[in-house]
Length: 479
Image (cartoon, rainbow, N blue to C red; front, top):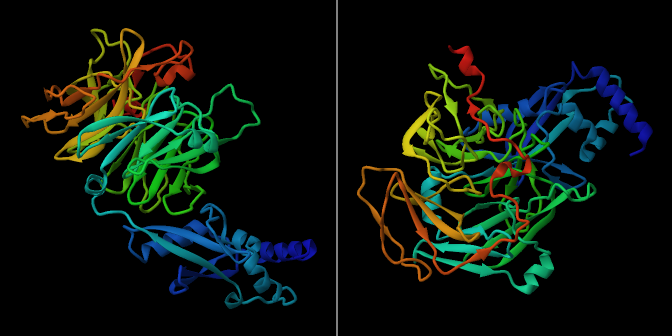
């Protein structure tokens, strides 16, 4: 369309935008009408989408698409006005052009068609993960290898990438900056970016490793540059990517065949989060915890209804100091336990126990569980069933070697439970749970890291001085 005509249309729409109504039709992917209504053209497209969701099943997750140039594109930004899409979506130009010469426009002549795809979320996310997970993986630090733990055989193996995979995908050694998450027998890796890299380099690789077939697939080499971010899998087919230096934008990758693109969550984080700890509660709330500065940030979103991120304020009666950071998270009853991570200045006047957050009362307190150091690169512990959760970590030895460690956490300390590790690569003996943990050490895999390898601690990128961390400002307001 000629630029003159386009400008002319913009003038018409701007002049009448407060009075105009636009019909929006919500259609299924097979062209069946689901819902239709007229909205003011000055309304945001997000409000129309919320109206559609409220008239349907609010427990479902929907993706919305607009046809542009005869192709469906997920290009909806819910903050934009309806007028933006009526003007800019190519397939609406013909409808508008026919009315330019008329001084009176009717609402029936303007229609925006939105396609709706229903994305399913299991009724019980933990049960879904337990049922559909056989293998759990972890990239091996500073190597082109990865670990695979098979929960059925209780074996842990170190698998090397082939020369063809390394050469084709141009995989570098996996570092502490390579963020990853497990998703039902697949290991998704979001390649981290070194701060010293050329400023012209603005993309990162997104990789998937099938832990059963061992196939390595490059999803894309054009994901946004990220540093100090975190990922979490939300069944059946979502990966949420939160945090990172210099960004509040949340990315979503939809797991489906030949999908090489990411989507953008319609709401920004309320603040930057560095290596946030992520967990799903009640099958609909995504919580993020972060305290890389002097305050503990807690935020959550209802990912089913796609609500804005809520800044959770603590409601403790008394001031409390938290000196645990970059921790893993696991659910227990009405609380979220903080496990591992860093414990800063664990002297006589600061807690030596792990902390827990009650998401019903929004109160924080030291847990009865003693703190144990585990560096959880993937912050979310993975359910195995029977109140047992697992993660793979690496620990240092006195000889500067790093060895893999299987960390199992029992959420029910009343159970007298033991685990037997039958791996050929580990000690075949019973290990009783102490303070909720059991650790299976692998004895015959040594991993040497070079002298120039940076610390495993997440704050190494900042060079911060270790200081006590405090809960957020709201605590002072409640006193």
